[in-house]
Length: 188
Image (cartoon, rainbow, N blue to C red):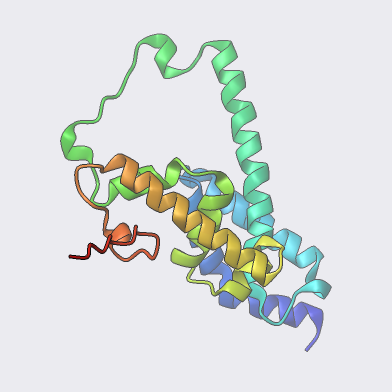
């Protein structure tokens, strides 16, 4: 197969997976999803000679870089709007969510949001994108041992955040953890 045919097959096979990957990371900014996905496949087209046989993790790596560019651009636009004073808060329009607005499992997303971007990404690659450690390593651009260590540390930090948020009850993750304190043995 030619490089063009390999690219076309990867595009057909992975377009929706890449779209979901991008959409989950743009937190409701749906207007940007198509733009970022288009950039991902533009980069893939330019680098089609480098496209590996297992293209999806590689495409996720490209998407990470495109998302980083989009987030930087969004931040620049946001700061400009803030400087101009045209944001909703400057004009007294505040939206307050009621208690019914809480989504099931929202506390997990809140705990995840408290982690570093790197920890969030490794957890999302394994949970949302369902990648194995070898594929995570490709997407992150590191070795598989480093990816496994990053995942282990990110899970530990997420568990700690959940425990901090829900101190009144044990978190479901802590119950299955190998990090729990050993029981004391008393003799006699």
